[in-house]
Length: 319
Image 1 (cartoon, rainbow, N blue to C red):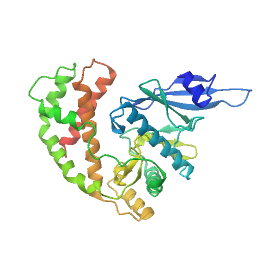
Image 2: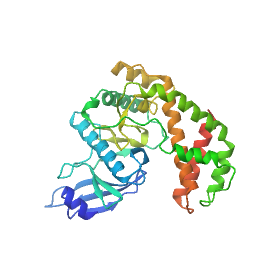
Image 3: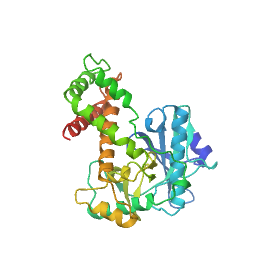
Image 4: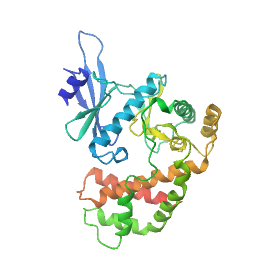
């Protein structure tokens, strides 16, 4: 990694420290103090190209998708959207460079601040600010970026269907497999019903007008920085109806939706909000089942997958 940083970004002689933050990627802070001046810092992210199924099913496809997303973030920031936490391009102009055969490396400016957490509600003023940020993002020109239109199908739909089909036989992947089978069996009917609902709604959204969306503007990806809120983690950016982002911001008060409509003139579709809320839950479910049906050992990661599977199925059976 040190060689990749030196070759791509001239980050040579920097001190690296692992940063146990976020999920789905590996992170380090890089620091350099020279000439008695202030310390210069960067934030380094390494992504596993086998673990980003929404970007593609092959390593070259995932790398290309990751580059397109990071390129879009740079374009948006240069266009004046200062809340976009965009990467620092390498000397070659690339925003993402391969690291070995199975990983990719990206370098970001270091942001002083703190982020929220998934499931932690933002205060009302911050929700309003986030709604305004999304309004600005959604009014950016989609032709200025090379983002694909997001797939409405679940990336791991096949694994979820297989799990539903194989409920009558033992799952032997590891210590959580049989528990996962029993839990899914108790909720199989509502899960199948929700899959049917997703299939009914998808054709209408497939032809709806698309904007540039972040994909996951939840509190965990909102950083409170000295200059205001920042949106981080742009690897899920894609073209989609605006409700792909808005369901994560909207509350029962309706204030955020009204604010968004005032700024954009776009009336928000409640059915589309529900579609993306349901799609998120089923996507989570399919990923957790995939992990717990596969060969595994008891680790903090598999324990988290089990707990998250319980949470996801509780939410799905309650609706």
